[in-house]
Image (cartoon, rainbow, N blue to C red; front, side, top):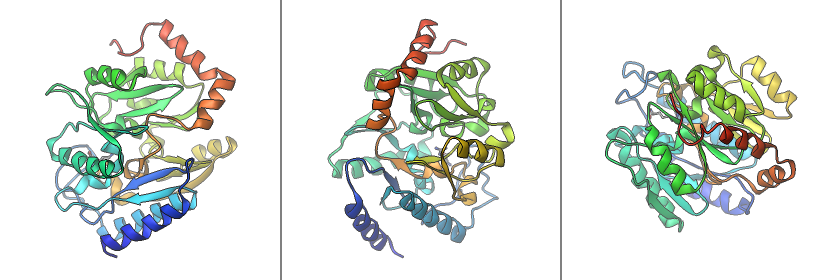
Length: 322
Ligand code: ARG
């Protein structure tokens, strides 16, 4: 299937189904995917993905997202950018603004320009993070929870960039320090489910950061190291469906008890580059803004705000002391 064809195919579908509450994901086909450099511990140039299988897994993920009720929009791949499949890394969406990631490694920096062109063509305002030369901020290190942003630092994002993020989007940022390079992005160790629940992998964080998350998340699903290593926290939530690359039995039982439907969408070939389901699909509803329904339910319960205030009271907000 050539690119033009699948663009038309998916656009047609999205136009049919688009409405204001519709979840929409931006994805890039793996035509030029491969491991041509090593910038995280999962990547090994001697362990190349099977490209046929990668393609199959990618299309299967597209179908699973669509079947769960969301729309998938496709952007074209670029031959010299093998990691461009990981669209979620390219930037943050804040309503009609697309804020380009500042990748730590120059090898990935050209990806953001291509994403920015797509957003400009859809009338988004495109912004760059006003960061210094030594600073970086990758969007997969940021996730909304309980009215604030959880943001990781240590491998791809610099702590100093959290301040800029907070100023730019006018939200409080809870800074989490990573200690294990296998969990180099926040989306491998933290997956918000709703206003009270999140899948969390404390093995990835400093002890102090673990305490912060414990205070922020009223009902965490705490992963053991071996569970977290399956990338099961690298999931996307479409309505009540949790689309995840694998689902350890214990994790599945808890999610089901909480009323979620589990959809396992294997992406072994992408894990070879250190990415899975969440990395492959950029959520256009905004990494930053939550759905109206969530905001409404928070207004009704007030629960999450209480947690946030509690943390503020300990004056540890914004920037974590070590
Ligand atoms: N090879 C890519 C990198 O190291 C993988 C990115 C995966 N993305 C993610 N959100 N975890 O940058």
